[in-house]
Structures are given as C-alpha cells and as structure tokens.
Amino acid sequence: MKYKKVLVVRGGHSGEREVSLESAKACIKALKKAGYQVSTFDPQKKKYNLIDKNKVDIIFNALHGKYGEDGVAQSYFECLRIPYTHSGVISSYNAMNKIISKEIFKKNKIKSPKYFVLQKQSYNKTKLVKYIKRKKIKFPIVVKPINEGSSIGVRICENMLELNKSVKFLFKKYQELIFEPYIGGQEIQVAVINGEPLGAIELEPKRKFYDYKAKYSKAAKTKHIMPANLKKSKYKQALQIAKKAHDALGCKGVTRSDFKFFKNQFYLLETNTQPGMTNLSLVPEIANYKGITFENLVKKILLNASLNR
Image 1 (cartoon, rainbow, N blue to C red):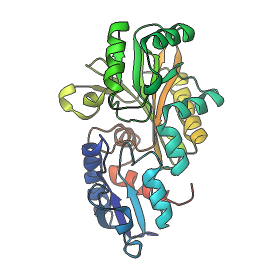
Image 2 (image 1 turned 180 degrees about the horizontal axis):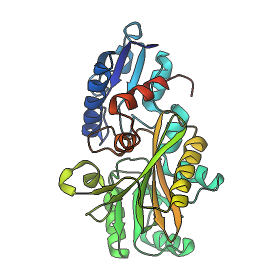
Image 3 (image 1 turned 90 degrees about the horizontal axis):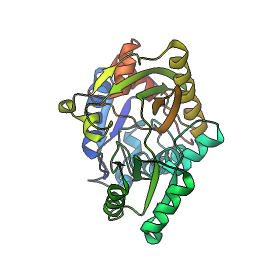
Image 4 (image 1 turned 90 degrees about the vertical axis):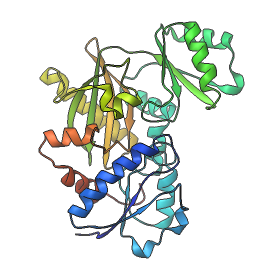
C-alpha cells in the first residue's frame, strides 16, 4: 500500500454539501474496510491551511459543486503538496465551467447543444429575444448557471413568459446564465475511470428531467437501466465519446459524462469530474455491473491520485 493515511475532504460550502457528506460517508467506510487510516476534513468548519501534511499521505476529494470540483480545492491541495484524487486544477475548472467545456467539446468535434450566454449587468428582455432568434433556438429552452452541478438552478421553460420569469429569478443569485435548446430522447450517462470507459447507464426519470431530486431521492423513483438500452454500435460510441471528452478536458480519476441520445445522435451535456458516490449514485452502479465492488472502486480512484495535473 503506497499510501496509508488518507484524509477524506467532505462537506464544503456548495449547494451540494449534503450529497458530499453522503458520498464521503460511503467512501470512508470502504477505505477503512480496505485497511487505510482515515481522517476527515470539512472546509466549512476549518481552513485548508490547518491540514497537517505530516499526518496525511493522500487526500480523497469527496467534495461536490462550487469550491470542491471547480479547481479551488485542488489549488489548495497543490499548495500543500499532498497527492489528491480526481482531476486537477485546470481540468476541474474547465469541466465545471459550462461555457469553456462546451468550447472544448466543439474544438474536439464532440456534439453538444448550441448555446448563448447572458450576463446579469447587460440583461434585458429585448436582448434575450434577439439571441434566441439569432441562434435559432426553439422552445422548450433550458436556462442554467454556468458553474453549478447536480442540476442546481436548471430551469426548462416552455415559453417566453416562463423563460423571462426564470431568468429574473436566477439573476438574483447568479451573474451569468447559459441558454440552450432542450434535447429530448434518452438520458445516457457514461463512467470513465483512469482514462478507460467503464459503462453506460440509462435513466428514465418520472420527473420532467433528471434534476436534483431525481438524482438523490428514492421517492423520485427514477428507473435505472444497466446497461443502457442502445444498439451495440451506439453503446460503444457513447463510451468512445465519453473517453474523448475525459481526455480533451485533461481529466484524471473518475468522470461521468451526461448525454441525451436523440434522433440517433449523442449530445454531450456535461462531464462531471466529481461524480457522486452515494447509494443512489451512477458510477458505483456501473462499476458494480462490471464486477467492481464499491471498495475496489474507491481503491482504484485512490491509486490514480497525484499532483501537478
């Protein structure tokens, strides 16, 4: 065992704090079972400079959302010179920022919904209508913050009245919003671990879309289909695109790419560099189907930890 003392960083300040705590809880249990010495750290309660690097061999990053998977926490880990799991500073920032990631996908010929962006300080209804016409985007239209995870802040609007209302509401909290057409079809999510695609799962949400509640509540009754109901050639294609996105963003460890499969085409919505590790999470479910226990999945993630990414 190269590393013995593992610090699990959990909780944090984002809207995904509770999910992070649940992910960490499962990972801590698995790490202890695997024989590691485990301690924990919550950035909401302590400052990063209170981490004693002499008592830590490696960091298991179980944070989600802002400050946890956007390069902020990663920059602290780099300063502390402690190896850590998942993606590095730049790849985390790029993947979390929906504008930058979309441009990277475009550059690498990965299909993603067309989009436009508006800033709070320059927003008005006339400009919004102008952009919709210029981009030839039809309703329903999706509006969301540029750097949130777990579908936080996502609104699907059926008409201009709904859209304008959603925009005004979101601009109370966010400075910049991204707009794109709603893509129908199948919800397909693909896991990649240590650079190799693991598998694809299909989701059938009972709700309007795979939102925060559908992701983390059993009451939402989202149906999981593993493996995804795709033709063999299309299943393989989904895995290939997910790996391409993982590599294009410069990711490490585990990622989960979220697709819509519509009219025989895959549309990549985003690549998540810190996918959930709760009992309802998709990466552990995909891994389990492939014969990888949760304990071994956590160990695989840990073994890929490093610095300077």
